[in-house]
Length: 479
Image 1 (tube, rainbow, N blue to C red):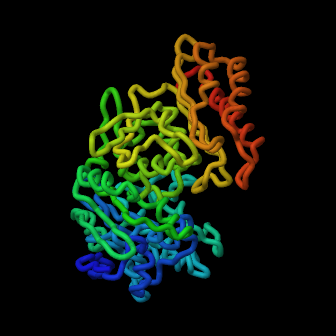
Image 2 (cartoon, rainbow, N blue to C red):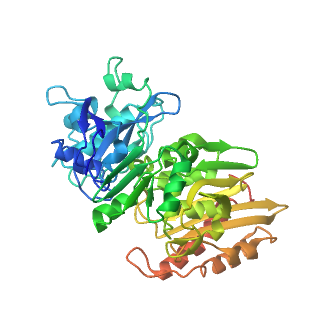
Image 3 (tube, rainbow, N blue to C red):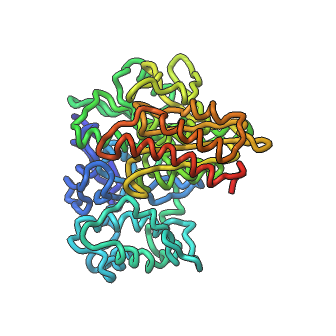
């Protein structure tokens, strides 16, 4: 396979990915260079042992150092980009502040996961809007360090107290810190092109038009953005695609538009970009984001990818169903809009036609007056849901004027609880109505017994979700 000119700036040095294939991960390539600090622990983006820093645009013409799972990112996706590994942050005789604090406070034992912690901590260390606070809490340190930055990193030896102490002890970058200075400069532009070989093609089109032309010609192409789902398929199931079509860089898929009648979210925006861009403008999604996987995953994963995989346990779908969202689908011959409630047709099946992809998600305005997202999982964060329930409702004169309820994990697809919606609409928003509706809610979907939860437990959680929503909004207004 010929890959001339495929270069990545790693720890300040240009490296050539001359022998990389479309399925070669950044982790595999980095370790082949001798940069073995990043490790493969889980190969699915859950442990964070593989974390590295990538220079990404900050939206204001500068650079944001962003931590990602290198085990999931194809190295070809990093062509022309800047990467920093734990080796590039510091050396034994000149430790980086994150390395020094972890060492001083005993935040490492076997050390396998430590380089990943170092990189995730460094991304938060260089966050430009981090500020000291006089009111630290369970999730924010006195130095403004957001502990969710470490939500995708696991340590099985040390325990997290010394790791948190190291995070809380971090100061702020000095004026001569080269990585801090780098933030004022633009991030590298994304390279485009096609890399072909005996094990497939990797294509980064120059425009959406080019992407749709290729997809029409090669409907067997695998569309990827953050590759957080495809990377798992490659690593654990040894999946291969004849063509990988990378869309994460296309401006047509990266716009965030807020209007009086709708909010449009580009399908290739990372979830972290969406969260920052919306800044709470969609309260229901603001509840979802902290519970959606980990920061490492959200830095790469997209709404287009989450909906494109059509998983029945994807976190975004229930919330977007409750918001009555619509998908904008694009193909070579034009666009069409499909309500999300009509998008899923079966287990991991959708209405997407050959040659078609998700361009954007539209959330209608105004949004529901009262919303709630409930995710039931074995861990509070960074876990797959057993049941996910999202509710959006409007009220008038003490009655339910409109309600939408999205459910995940209780059927072969994400679904709307239409029986419950019909029962509630027009009725008084009181305990009697809610109790009756909760019994109907328990019967929605076709819950299964599996290793995450029993069908009985799932039904009980559905019932409880509506009771909790009423408790949170007894008068039908935002608390």
